[in-house]
Length: 76
Image (cartoon, rainbow, N blue to C red; front, side, top):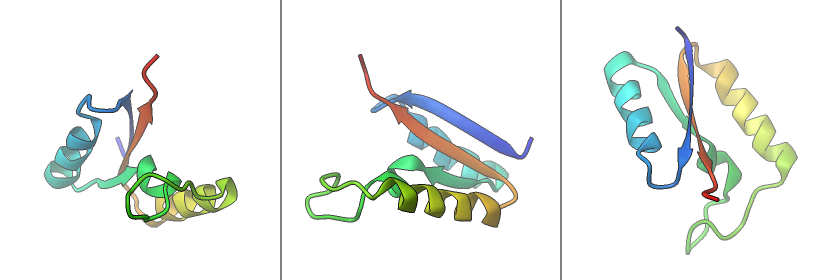
């Protein structure tokens, strides 16, 4: 398996699992929060434009042969 996609709610351990898979199996950990949010202080206050998010994510998905991607789902 070369690609792993993990879904989960905030605080459910998805990012921790992604980091473990990266360290143990040499997968590149891609967290969608890193593509969605601009670096701001305080964090998570300004979203990137959709086209930029998609371009950055596609670039990194093509760059690495094995990756695990984390996507957080909003709790209902």
